[in-house]
Image (cartoon, rainbow, N blue to C red; front, top):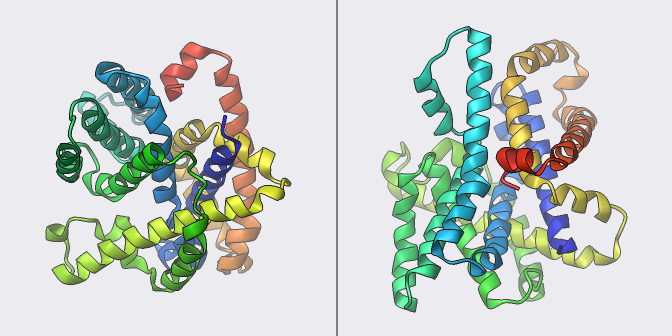
Length: 337
């Protein structure tokens, strides 16, 4: 395994947990104005998408067209179907009502939107590499891939991550190591620091989307928002990768982050499920917690409360992941691994 990639993946999934914890602990939509939340969300999913594309290149290279498609179905679509079914069963039990149409709504919903986005992008890449032989043909097809993102659920989110998956994929095709970013590292760090203060509520993909014709914002302004979030996502991702390269001699947290990086799929899926189904209890706890004046302070809440909760949840999910890993059949059905 590539230790450095596992460390980057581990850092990314920890940021996902921290961001979701801040979101669930915050009052209403106030997290959009939280500087830690804005920092995390400005790059963490683009970073995941870059790594996914990078790791997908050697994986698909070993397979023919049908084998590559099958690997994406079993690795991504099967877990989506499995957790959709679990979600549907729990809903049916809790509401004491079985509605088959609800399964479809959950299946195409956004609980596991990241998996849908990677699935959509990977299928476009498989066609580009396996069926199209000319460089110009691939270029045209990859550009058409933006339209293909509308075929799959959560189109706006697919559009957001698609360029990062493609970039990671072809970076790996042309370069031996994902970590050779020394020429651009400091530039991206400075660019990211410069752009971050401009990140606000309208910068989130969840608030304004990508498609300009669906926006309430003036077209020219919306295009600038799209361009800005693509650039800051890429700059932030490369900055994190570069800092990981610089910190190779710092081994204090390597083992922990690399362990998390080996179970990112499991942690991502289960934390989505956790935050969704414990939402009712979470709201009650949060309402009680906000009676405390100390927890009204964002810095205290995001560091003193969110981080310990993240550590507990992370350790729990790692433990569960290792249990499921003992049975290859269950692990395959649940996580595509």
